[in-house]
Image (cartoon, rainbow, N blue to C red; front, side, top):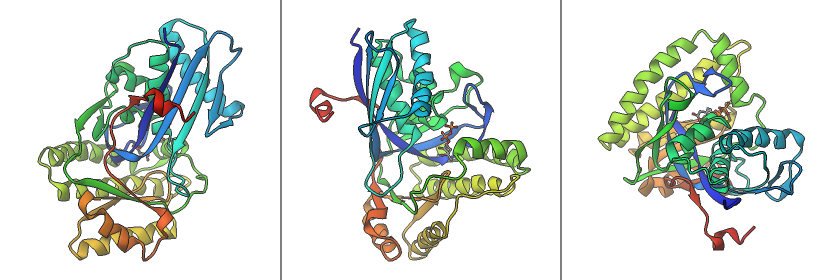
Length: 331
Ligand code: DP6
């Protein structure tokens, strides 16, 4: 058994959103979702299982993490320990590779990287599909970060068949411009926000119904490599998700004034004949889906309202992979 492994996982942005669980313990979603994995934003995680360790240790960006954060990691590693039938404790070292000032660290890349590294370090040999069911139980969006390109998370019927499947490598001039509006910690986490929405928003059942149709439509657009349709469905789906929150009790919204500035900038670009479409997650940052070949032009338009360090261009990212010795040497 190798005991030690280091894995890179990229973050992903949902184009058809996951927003609400039907089973909170097992992270089973109310609807299937579909995302684009991003090249620029990723997490590298090394896991070492060691019989000399009295407990798990967790370091993020070189700093040892406190009890609460470490407990989250321990609980997640317990899934792998149960599978392997071992009690070995681990040392986990994660580095988030996110361009400075972006505030875009994500639980998707974090749990996908940790799942990949724990799988290899324990010699479990889980296939990617099964591994995605493990990643899911760290954070729902992590399910999709196992694969690159466009990825669907099939809601499934139970814990074993709620997994991710690769849909397309997105290698047909697809790109994204991320507008990092704000890096403050969120007031309402996605976990709390989706729970409140499911429990109290009268718009929620309509969201679930509509997301079912959106996922079929977006897969048809991807199959046809129809960028305009892809963008239209993406933008509409994100808006509908944010609409459900305004109907929650108490109502909430992640939008900030600069989010609107970014949305209007994308709309203005469309009027000028440059197709680009926005989507937002549980935060004020705006992600602009575009043709990769037009990303620089789009960024230039955003530079009129945002500083250079807030704008990140990325191409589609790949699925998880083990890092080579040379890449690992940075640790
Ligand atoms: C709006 O995956 O962060 O980004 O499963 O509770 O950890 P938990 O939630 P999380 O929620 C992501 C919500 C979203 C949409 C998406 O990524 O699909």
